Image (cartoon, rainbow, N blue to C red):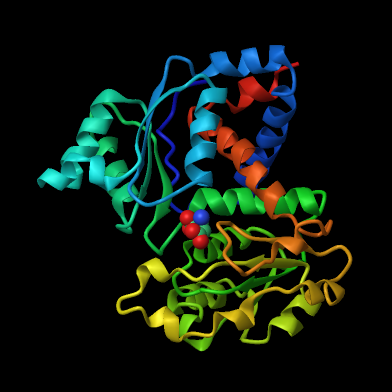
Length: 327
Ligand code: ASP
C-alpha cells in the first residue's frame, strides 16, 4: 500500500493510542525479522527505491545513528549534513532554500535544528509542491523530540509487557528546556491513568504550556524538588541532563543540579519492578554503577530507538501491512 496523504512526524501531539500500538507491534516484528539473514534481505528490499537526507544542525549520537541505521535496514540510501557549518546557510542561504535543495534530491528529510518550527515549515512547503515528501522532526530546539517520545513509550510498553495503564512516572531534571520532557508528556496522555511526578530545581520547572496541557486533559501531576520521594513512589524514573546549551548567560552554573542525581543508595528506595530511563547523553545524573541493576533500562531504551525508528519510517511509507504479513 503506497497511497494516501504523506505522513510527517512533527509533534507527539499527532499520535493516538491505535497508532502507537501499531508502531509498537511493527517495531517488535522488525526486530524479530532482522534476526535472520533472509529477514534482513527482505527488509532491505522494502524501500530500496528511496533516498533520504539527514540534516543534523545540532549535535547527536543516538538519534543520528539510529535513523541512519534504520534507513540502511530498509534499504534507503542516505546522505547527511551533520552540522549547519557545512551547509550553504553559512554563505547566507535561507533555510527555505536549503530545504528546497534537500527536497529536490531526496524522498524524505530527517531534520534536527535549533529553530523550533523548521520541520513544520518544511512539511508545509512541500505538501503544496508537486512532490510531497515526509519530514521527520529529529529534535526541534528546546521544544519537541517526538521520535524520542515514541521510543520511550515503546520502552515502557516492553518493560511492563504491554501494561502501560495506571503508571506513575517521575520526570527529573531540566523540565523547562528538555524537549524530551514535553514530547513524552504529550505522548503518555494516550495511556489511561498515567500520573506524573515532575522533579526539578525551581529555575528549571515545567513550562506553563505543558502544565496547561496536563490540566486540560485532566492528567494527575505533582511538582517538587524531592527526588527521594519521587523514587519511592514511581514506576518509571526518567532522568534528564541539564540543557545548558540553551543558557543565555551561563545561568546553569548557579543551579545545584547534584540534588537531582540518582545515587546507588536510591536503588534501595526503588520498587522492585520499577525501571530507570534516560534519553541520553548522561553526564552525572546516573552513575555507571547503577547500569548493572536489572531496573536500569536506558541502554535497552537506546536499542529500542533503532527498532522504533525503523518502524516509524516503514509506517511513514505505508509499509506496515507488508512487514506485519511477513512469515
Ligand atoms: N538526546 C536528547 C535530545 O536530543 C536528550 C539530550 O540531549 O539531553 O534532546
